[in-house]
Structure formats: structure tokens, C-alpha cells
Amino acid sequence: MAREKILKHEQWSGGRGFIWAAAGSAVGLGNIWKFPYMAGENGGGAFVLVYLLCIVLIGVPIMLAETMIGRHAQKNPISAFRSMSSALGASPAWGAVGWMGVLTGFLILSFYSVVAGWALAYAWKAASGDFVNLGATQASEQFNSLLSNPWQLLAWHSLFMFLCWLVVARGVRSGIEWVVRWMMPLLLLLLLSLVVYAAWLGEFSKGLGFLLNPQFSDLTRSSVLMALGQAFFTLSLGMGAIMVYGSYLSPRESIGGLTGAIIGVDTVVALMAGMAIFPIVFAIGLEPQAGPGLVFQTLPYVFGQMPAGGLFGFLFFLLIVFAALTSGISLLEPATAYLVESRAWRRGKAAAVLGLVVWLIGIACLLSFNYWSDLYLLGFIQALDGKSIFDLLDGLTSNILLPLGGLGIAIFAGWKMSAAVTADELRLGAAYGLWRFLIRYVSPVLVVLVLLSSLGILRT
Ligand code: TRP
Image 1 (cartoon, rainbow, N blue to C red):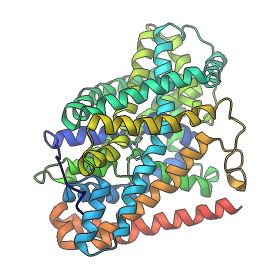
Image 2 (cartoon, rainbow, N blue to C red):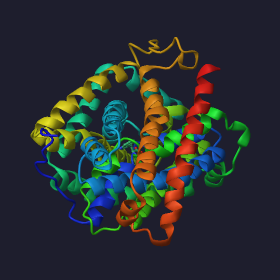
Image 3 (cartoon, helix red, strand yellow):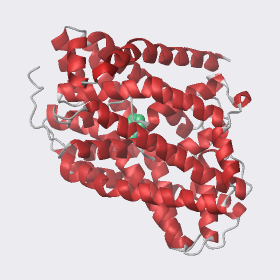
């Protein structure tokens, strides 16, 4: 392809740069904001169990595959699928997996940025003393009043998108790697101290029991779909984010060890977030089914009660912002890398144009909390009636688009690429046979089964 000339391709400073960046991408609102409320709505332990199964049987093999494809091609996801499929004599239609990933990334980032904006707003609130002696009902009211104010939502959403642009525009090493290297350790430290605090103050055993005790009666077909979607979402799989990060990895590094570390950190952080939040939820008598507002309605109350809660609350919400930022940049990077490498755009301009598109979709999303809260775009489909634009963006991407992208990646890695190439790239030793079995049979079949059953949900 004549126009597809590769201008430059940056690399991480080493394997650690990749670990921090990929862990930064994985650990985000998905762990701290989404996982606790989804577990809360879907029966706690039963949901956690299905989620962990999805991580092991689908997440691990697909993350290895994504990293491997990116590293092997040394290109952004769109160009990687194009050039590899032509080299393998496979259909050029494989490029569609890359394009779908770019679209998915836009849609995710548009609602992600709105929620990250809530965290920014809350960091501000904490710092200005809004949490001091806040009652539990007042904490809920505070959240609802933020949602009903589109101008505030817009301001914070815009600020977050600007931050994403700032980092991505600076490039792989001096932007992305620089940010994740100092934000991620800080985040882990603060989360740990919050768990300790929750254990000391809250109903720790009740919270832990909720997270670990499976209530299978609460587990519906749609909870299984959501557990699958959450596994993709939390590991940043299925849209090329990990692939593009893998493409900045040197051939010397061993993919297996790096991937294991990333998945380990992500899973521990999700469970820790649950352990920090549920004890508090029970201690203040909130329902674990509070939905997307869970974190924003529980924690301010706690910070309001504790000494130096303003400072601690500020730090905590700031760190949610960091977690969101290190994820948000990975949603913008695949498309940016494509424009830079294959269309010869300047990085700053590419990130700005893409960011602007995301910003616009984000506006529709934030309006769905106030002016457009009664607008159900897909209301003619029975199961989607009553779903706002925000709900639709979230559900469509996590539960449909990411699993579809992951399916494409699994089939490409397991059936199109030769065993010789993948074995050489992954260097998994004795575990290689297991990976190949999982990626060829187990992961794709499970994804298809869950997706098909979700069609059933749509019909009923
Ligand atoms: N994994 C992030 C989280 O849990 C979100 C995210 C970042 C993501 N990049 C992604 C999700 C790519 C899917 C695909 O918050």
C-alpha cells in the first residue's frame, strides 16, 4: 500500500515501561467505579466468580494474543491487521477488526471522560470542604445535583479530554510512559490505605462476605454477559489499546511474564476497590445496588466523617482521575498512532482532531443525565427501552463491541497466524500448548455463546 508508509515507531524505555502503561490502561474507572457497582447489582460473589472465570479463560489468552499481534507487526492496530493479513494471504477484511476497535475506543472514551469528569468535580468538592459532616442522604443529593447540571458536567468533561490530549500529544515515552510511571505507584498506595481504613471503620466482614459469597439466585443471563463485558473492559481488551502498546515493545521482552503482571495488578485492584467500598456501603446503610453513583455517594460521606477527610478525599478522587487518565490515553492512542504512522499526521494534530470527535459524543452522553434523560434512542427494541445514551454507549461497547473485537483477535491469532510464528513470538515454553488450545477453542466459543445468549435477552 503506497500511502501506508511508516514514518516512525517509538518504543518504551523497556519492559517496565510497557507494564506500567498497560497496567495503567487496565486499572481505571472499570476497577474503582464500575466493578463495585456491577458486583453490587448482580449478586456480589456470584458475579465475581463468573468475572474471574472470564478473566482466566478469555482475558488471559486474548491479552497474550493482542500484545503478540502488536509486537509482531510493530504497527498500530489498523495497519497491523492490514499488513499481516496480506502477508498471510488472509482476507483484507481483517482490517475491519482494527477499524471497529477505533470506533469502540471513541465510544468508550466519550462516556469514560464524563465519569472521569465526576471524579474531577469530586476532587474539587473535597478540597473546598464540601464533604465536611455530610449526611448519607446529602451525599446522594450532592451527586444528583451534579448530574442535573450540564454546564458543570461539560466543564469537567472538557478538562479531562484536554488532559488526555496533552499526554497523547507528547508521545509514547515523554507523554504516556512519563505519566504512568509516577501516577500508578501512587494510586496503588492510596487504594491500599483506603482498604485499611475501611477495614478499621466499616463492616469489613459483611462487605467481604458480600464480595465473596456467591448468591447464585441473583445471577441472571444478563449478569453473565455483563461479567464477560467487564472482563474485556477492565483489561482494556478487544479494541487495540493493548495491541498498540505491544507494538512499542522490543522483541527482546518476554510477553508472558509482562501480561501476567498486568492481569494480576488489575484483578487485585478491582477486588481491593470492592473491599474498600462495600464495608462502607454496609456501615452507612446504603444499598449495594446503588448503581453508577455508588462510589460517588458512599465515599464523600466517609471522608466527611474522618479527620483530615478533605485532604484524604481530595487525594482519593484525584487518584481516580489519574487512574482514568492513564486509561483514557490508551483509548485515544490506537487511532492517533494510525494517523501518525500511516497518514503522516503530526501527533498533536491527530490527537486534537480525534479528541474533538470524542468530546462531541461525550456531550450527547452528559446531556443524557439531564435534558435528554427521557430520550431513549433505541427504545423501539424492547430490552433497550428506558436506556439513556449513557447506558447505551456503556452497554453497547462493553457487552457487544469489545467481545466482538476480542473474537476477531482470538480467531486471527489462533487460526490465521501459524503456530511457528506465535510460538516464537510468545515464548511461553510448556504453557504454549495451553494458550493455543484456549485461543483456538475455549475463548472464541465462550464469547460466541455468551453473545448468542444475549440476543435471547434482547428478544425477551
Ligand atoms: N480498562 C480501563 C478501565 O478499567 C478502561 C479502558 C482503557 C479500556 N482502555 C481500554 C476498555 C480499551 C476497553 C478497551 O477503566
